[in-house]
Image (cartoon, rainbow, N blue to C red):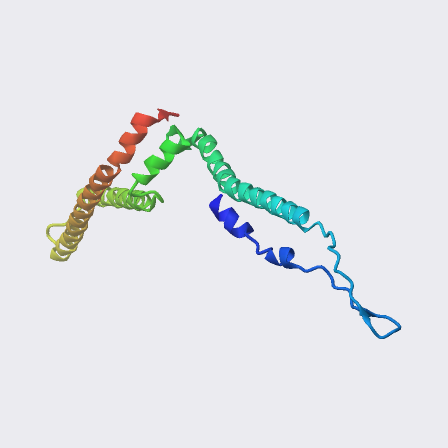
Length: 203
């Protein structure tokens, strides 16, 4: 309220100091001046100044009330949707969670976009295709007749066996690398999976 008084402290001294109008002396016919005594004129300035101060005070209070109530209204409006949103149930993988728990689980997921999981799935499909091809090639080599009296036939067969063994070794190395990558992925996903188990329900 102190600040309001400072803003409303208007210098109105000029209202009190305003002089009553002077009447010009009137000359008589004889050339002599007749002095007229000044008469005070009632202006009502005191009444007007009081009303002005009251009006300014009311306007200041209205402005202060509007300014002080605006931030709280904005805060209430901004925070209201969050409570209703957090109560919504959403699907997260194979679980049904509240929106809050779903967001918390997502923050623990190192592969939220699923790129790593998709890459591991693609590698698994490739390994399966190679495994089937190796099985077929092994069956063909084992059932193939080799004329042991013909060195060229023996050499060709041995070359096929060497090629098979090379592809088999490469497959086994890639398969082990894939298995290690799966273990690392599962370990990284464990906090996320554990949170879903503890805070959500299976679908």
